Length: 467
Image 1 (cartoon, rainbow, N blue to C red):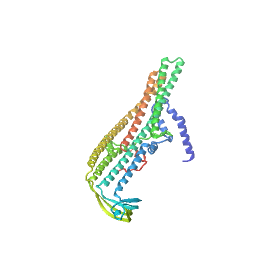
Image 2: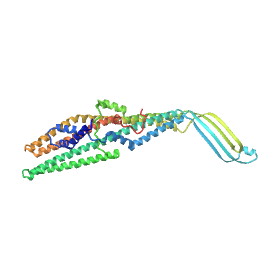
Image 3: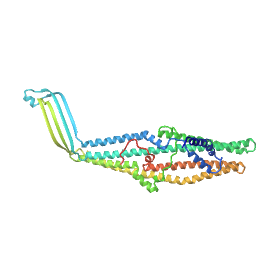
């Protein structure tokens, strides 16, 4: 495309946005809903760049304290796995010491002295390798690996929920921005009607009651703008709390996820959520960790075997002047016979912990199913409502425009016109609410499946081993 064509296109866009589009958006200026569709098409052409939902969620995920807490918790659990695996490896200890020793024993007395004071020197090195510890190390490694999986899924679930909260705040800010604009348009329509009635009243051709009536409706329209502005400010406050700051640019309304990404039936949606929801996966991993903990608690009922190697180099021990060196290679068994019933109590405790973890899993299962059912119902309900609400907006638009013309020629009362204007305002509000409710419900379904971050192409701040 040459420069002349680009300049012509830019000039066309400038004229469209500056002169044509504002005229098309003035309520009542044109008859019918076709012009509204034209205005919407024009508004979508060469739209102004802004901040996308993907960018906002990505920023929030990277900076959210709850997620960073989970990231560090996950890293900590991975270190616990390495710590548990250390039980498979040998330990090596080096000991050294020097000091004064006074000895009084049979050896010193045999030398003709009651006691002997010498400078004692010690040095030794000891190696110890576990051969069998009653499966304690193996069970502890399994437990810590399950805990790592649990924190990984918890991190994923926290990030998913944070993404959903961010999406909710993002859409709610857009929703309230549109509702504020509708309230301002409604105020402008009432202001135009008021100006028209005021001119008639001042000229002596209008009724005083009409002026009072439109004055009351104008006051209500002003109140609606104030309320809409307050709701927008509240939505902005929530957005700042979740994201961290106010949007630097205009927010871009996201498109609805493609139908292929959403379940076809409620049963399919529930089954998918039960299979993939990260919080439920985390609860299942906690059950596995509790089972491994019970296995580890049984290690005290087995004898423990270790290979021990040691070498020492000592001087002046126990009053005997000179060196005292030795070396050992031993396989040692340690077997606790009785410790007051503590081991049995510990094993009974871990059984209760398994039952607790299972009930937490069962509760999480119910919550996941409930969340998906609510999300699915909300999506289906709003999806069915949208068509009717769109028809309601179109019909009330045509009615308001017709009433405006009929009022101008005296065939409709002012009350008819104001009621039509109010019905159109409420119809537009209902459609905007249903549209955003439907969009958010679709994102809720993705969240219930643990796929919202994937859809938004947002990665976790820490690589996790999700099994």
